[in-house]
Structures are given as C-alpha cells and as structure tokens.
Amino acid sequence: MTHKPRQQSESGFYHVVSKGDGAQIVFESDRDRIRYLQKLADACDDFGTIIHAYCLMSNHVHLLVQDPKQNLGYFMKQLNERYAMYFRTITGRVGHIFQRPYWSEPIKTDEHFLCVVRYIHANPQVAGICATSQYKWSSYQAHLAESPLVEVDFTRDLLGGVEQFERFSSSGDTTAVPFPGSKLRGHLSSDELLHIAWAAIGKDTLNSLKAMQPKERIAPMKTLKKAGLTEREIARLSGVGRISVRNALSSG
Image (cartoon, rainbow, N blue to C red):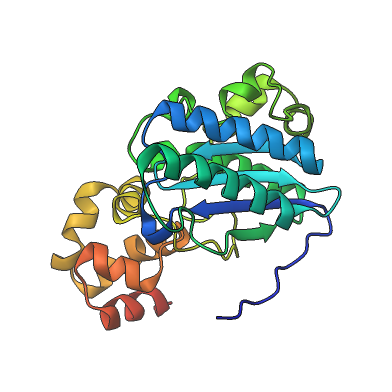
C-alpha cells in the first residue's frame, strides 16, 4: 500500500503520534516507559531532534518535536524499531509493535504549538486516568521545573513563565483534536471518546440525546462536533441515527 508524502513543516515543529499495532498496548509496566524515554533521549542525541512535549499512554505515544536537521523519518524509525526490539524481547510479542506509518502533522503557528502542548498533556485526563498535572508519564511536570530531555524554555517564553503555563494548561476545552483543522484521528479509543463527550456536554446530556426532540439535540451535538467528534462518533456514542445527527449538525 502506498502512502501520501508527509507534509513538511516550514517551522520544523511536528505533532507526532505512534500507535500500537492493532491498537494493542505498547507499555506493560513503568519499566517499559522508562526504557522508551531512554531510547527517546538516545534518538534525540543521534539526530539532533528536540522534544518540547510528550505523553506515554497505554497504546500510543504523543510527541511534539522540533526537527531542525530534517531527520524526522530517521529519528522515528530508530526510536520505534529499538523500542520494539526491547518490547518483543521482554514480552515475547511477535510482529510489529507500532502501527505503520506513524502519524505526523506540521505545526504552523505559535498558537498551534501551544494548543498541541496542552492537548498532549491533557491525554490522561481525557482518558479518565487522572488530572493532567498528576500524570507521571508526560512532560507536564518537566515544564514546572527542568528536564534533560524536554526543552521547556520555548514554551515558557511564549506563555510568560511557569505560572502562566499552569494557567494555560487548565484553561482550554478538552477536545478530540489539538487544533481546529487538525487531521489527527484514529488513535482514540471508545473510552477516550466517551470521556471527551462527557467533558463537552456532561454524562447526563449525552445519555439523554436519544430521547430528546430533534430541536433539543442541535446545541449539544454541535458542541460535540466542536470538541472534535465526527458525525459517526456522535451517532455511536449517543445512539442517535446518522441521518438525525447530520440534520442536527447542519441546522442553522
């Protein structure tokens, strides 16, 4: 199967997602996460890549990378292959560990950059694991202090300091995509999508959508759409038919 050429970033910044093959987990223990971060640091040293944010979830990884030497493909190949070799040895898994190819999207503006930082750190909260600030396996805490792996000064300079970073991280709506117009799809589980819907309109409202009159559904369904859910996902989570969802979303 052929794939479209990757869109190059004029800024050198990318949001990258590596997903477990077949949505399978890629980390079974904290030991695995530590080893991944070690291999991430090694790949950064080898290819001159800079990490501005990361989050390790059970079946996927988010990275916000700066690629000044245009080595993103080589960087990701080494990182994923070397971690996969370790993970197969430890677990006895066979075949691919990460889905191919990895997903990437150029970051074009400072606003886009900051939204991606916030989105990456919010992943565990969206998934219902814990508050963003309490998750151990993201770079959130690094932005409050110092880190040999993560470049934190760039983000702080854009926001105006550590306190502003904390305020910004808790101020935005939690959405299924990091920035309006983003092409990021496909790595979210049903549970994660459910938590996004709850955060957007509330559990009771989501559960009541099917029983609502068509006009009553318009506002909450448009809120779900704004949060990044697709027409198909709204229908699946609410139990409302696709045609009814489409009619609600197209209403003036």
